[in-house]
Image 1: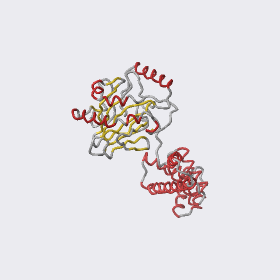
Image 2 (image 1 turned 45 degrees about the vertical axis):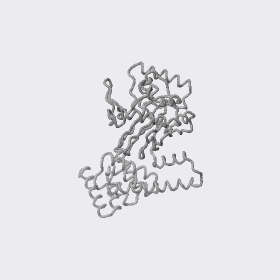
Image 3 (image 1 turned 120 degrees about the horizontal axis):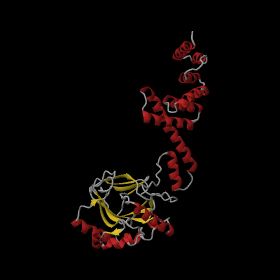
Image 4 (image 1 turned 135 degrees about the horizontal axis):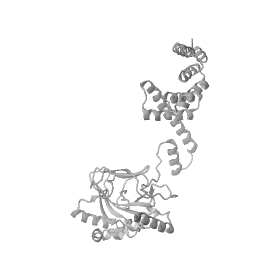
Amino acid sequence: MNDQVRETMLAEAAMAALRRGDATVALATLREMADPPAMLMAQACNRGGDLDGEAAALRRILDSDMRNLPALLGMGQNALRRGDERGSISWFRAALAQAAATGAPPPLQPLLQQAQASIAQSSQRFEDHLSAAIRDLPPLPRIAHATDLLLGKRDLYLQQPSMFYFPGLPQRAFYEREEFDWVAPMEAMTDAIVDELTAVRAKEAEFAPYVQTSADRPAPNNPLRDDPSWGALYFWQNGAPVEENACRCPAVMAALAHAPMPVIDSRSPIALWSLLKPGTHIQPHHGLLNTRLICHLPLLVPDDCALRVGAETRAWRKGEMLIFDDSIEHEAWNRSQETRVVLLFEVWRPEIGVEEREALTRLFQAIDAFGPAQVDNGG
C-alpha cells in the first residue's frame, strides 16, 4: 500500500469516526497521518474538547488562506469557549465582513447568525460595563461622544476637503453663533433681507442652478447638476460683486460687510441666496477647503428642512445663523411643501491667524494663476 492510499484511508476512517460521534478514535486516526487535513483535525479536536488543538489546526488554514470563512467562524467559536469574549468578537467581525464581501454558502448561514447574535450580546454587555464606570459623573459631551465612537453608535467624520487641506485645525462640525461678535448685527438685518428676497422673487421666481455644467470642464458628478431645484442668486461670485444683484439688495450687501469673508482674487468672497425647492435633497459631499467656515442666515425656513454635518443634524431657524465646516461630509434636505432659502457665505476659520491668512491668500492666488480654478460646488 503506498503512502497516498494509506493517507486517504486514514482520512476516511477519521470522518467515519466523527460521523459516529467518536472523537477519540477520529483524533487517534488523524494523528497517524503524516499531513492530516486541517479542517478535519479542527473538527475532531472541537468534538474532543481539545481547544488548543482545534485552534492550531484552524491557524494552519488561515496561514495559507486568511479569509477562509469556516476557519474564521471556528476561531470565533473557539475563543468564545475559552472565555475570550473580545477575541471571539474580533474573529466573528472578520467572518461577517468576509461573508458580506464574497457571500456564504447556506450551511454556514446559521453560524453567521450566531456570530451576529454573539456580537450584539457582547456589545450590550460592554456598553453596560462602560456606563457603570462613568454613571456618577456629570454630563460631559466629549466623553459621551468618545464613548459612542468606541461602541460604534456614531461614525467618525473628519475634514476631507476635495482640493486643499490645512493641518492642525479642530475637527468641529458646527460652530455656535455666540462665538462670533459679527453674527448678531447680521441676524438683526434678517427682516430687511427677507423683504428684498420677496421683492426679487416676485420678479424672478426661478434662480439659476447652483451646480452648473461648464463648457471647459468635466461635468460635476452631482445629481442636481443644472437643476434649479437647488438654486443660487449670487451677490459675490469669484471674488467680485455681482453688480445687478448688489444694487437691488443693499440690505444683503450691508449685512455681508459685517462678516470676515476671505478676499482672494478670482476666488473669494462668495455670497448667495441658496434656494431648495420642496422635495430636494443635496446628497452627502465635501467642500473644497477646510480653511473656511460656511455660514447660513436662514430666511425662508419651512418645517422638515435640515442640514447634517458629520454625525450632527440641525434644523434652520429664521434669523439664527448656522455656521459649519463644509470640508466634513454634509448633506441637506427640504422635505416640506414650501421653498427654503438661506443667505450663504464663507468666512475665515477663526483659528487661522492674520499671517497665515495672508500666506493662504497668496497660495490660493498662485494655485489659480497656474491654471483654471476648480469650481466650488460645495455649499
